Image (cartoon, rainbow, N blue to C red; front, side, top):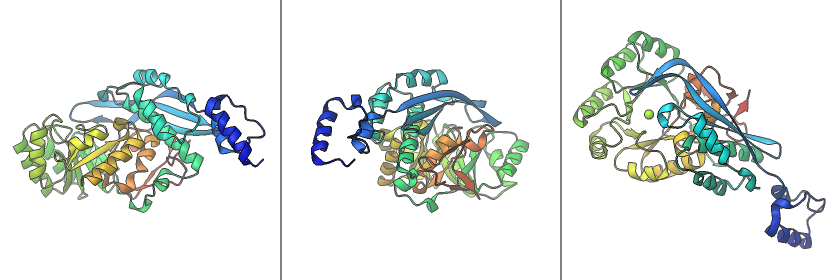
Length: 377
Ligand code: MG
């Protein structure tokens, strides 16, 4: 039935007082206002353990599994999927995520399109818990995109042909294993290498003995002296390295600003930064930032960081943890606007429960599934 002016005024008045209690009456059927007020969002979550194909070593740790939490937000029969990935060094766990998610009450909201309000509430529940917060943000974006029937890159107006190549990460290892991994990474056009130990030059020489592909280097705060770091950057530039990520400890702000000013290669902040205000702190200290959904609470804040960094003339890289295709597909919605992407987390695991963004000839290919571009297997 059509909603005439009188009924509209009547319904608006009722909505003003007790919208959630309204029955889905015949008179008000098929009106968006009533539909939204009568339906609720339901959050579910379950722990899941990702199995890594290789033991993964960086400058500070080694591991073969990653704990994650998979979330679902259901609304009006539509399900949005989300994920929190929690490598132990970041301080979150399935226990902390479970504790946080138990406190989240989405039933108080009757309109999933109120992303700002809902996510501001989620952020206010507790400090930290950024991966757990991201698991809500991602599920909510997936849900809203599905309700709109479009993937987020399209809703945001991005050109999917502009996605960059993704780099494929090779951990610190013996020369034999590194050569093997480079061979396995044949379809990828950019190799990301973890440096920051005694054998940095050996790692690069080993890779160069089997491929001439561009390399990007992640030091994970491993270099302690700025002069040595600069010398190393010049050496890496000669070897075809494109940028250096987090070369020095995050606390060394003055040394880092000095290094960035003199460096022939862009310097990218990773461990140094987490959320939106950190982009301002990174300006003038690093040439660019690495945005990760698990650190910045999800897509909503990630997009704000991307826009701010670009406005400040900084480079933007999209990164990830070891994650399923869920969080990777979400992050890749922003890929058309990024300079570099390191979205290989789902490629490093053997038990991905989803299918989403693909890598074709090393390039990120966004799928046209609505939401975050994901299909549940
Ligand atoms: Mg990094």
